Length: 139
Image (tube, one colour):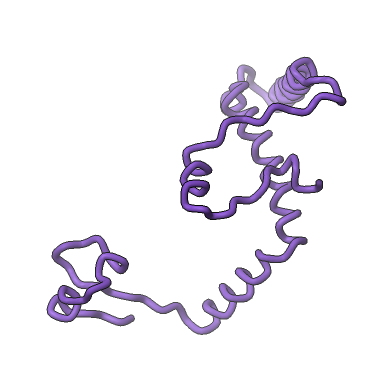
């Protein structure tokens, strides 16, 4: 751990890039060498196309789980007992699939894209590239 006193930290010209605190000084922690090496290796792996493809699939699955949990009330079960709860989950999944299919456009029409989120707008304004949607990751 590296500790800087207030006298060292206050006159620094790049202090605003380091901390937002007006009064206190800066403490910087360094992880153990093994953890640092692991972080470097994992961050390098995250830049590979294979990892990005796996992550794209995961984001699609997580969006489906989020849709079921928030859009169809899957956080609470209406029934007691595992067989009845399982039946509710299966029927809700079927209903969600029917809803998706009924709202889908014909295959020859292009899908309309959703408006960008606030975070995507933030990235676009600063010229930071953002990952493609999981739906377009394979194309």
